[in-house]
Image (cartoon, rainbow, N blue to C red; front, side, top):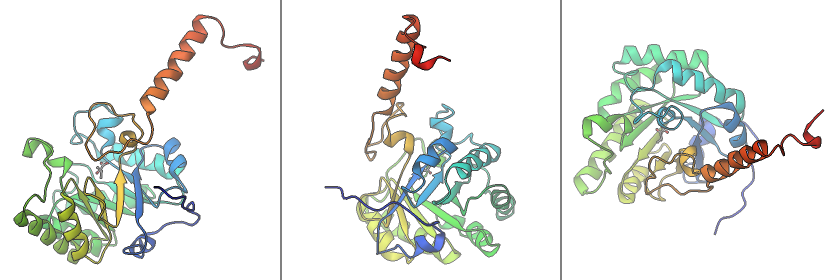
Length: 270
Ligand code: KIV
């Protein structure tokens, strides 16, 4: 049974999010433009401008060809629409190969957008990069578990944390990334047992996607949860709206009206 919760009324910062661990579940969705970001303002604590936009908005088969320019452009649009949520910028593939490259690209994010943190994919091997960013005043969300930017190198999207050894690896990744300064650990596509082990191990909040109901918060890709992205539907996505159906009905009604010369009628004419 769902409950009615109050809307967000004040600006949510990373400190707000840090204080929510163990107190109240954190809500996060993706957004890629001002129109939808404005609809999500006041509803969720966090917005992720995810590189998933490369698939849902640009029709690409994976996230790998997203660019810094593209991500900056969409983040600026999201910043125009949403004023209260804490906004996270997803660093695209290839934009954080070394600490130097990461610093150059992430400082551009702070200079050119309102994002409060950058997200990077990777386990403990990324600790040096996370440390370099944090030491230079850039907050980091560390994304572990199933990493969409590894889809080509791993030959698909592989659920993680299926055995004790892998759970231990994930916990170690999270602890090392937290020690390097990560403000949030985002855990994707792992068994709930693994997500719980990670959540219990770290002091910073965890946000899950396809990680069961055990993390400190949840994130979903908006075009999945509202039924606009039809290429495939991951098991973990709960569809809150049949958006594609609603749009198809709307566009069909418009076509029929125009063809029948029923639109515009007197009400919609000067
Ligand atoms: O790009 C994205 O939307 C993401 C989520 C899947 C967490 O990284």
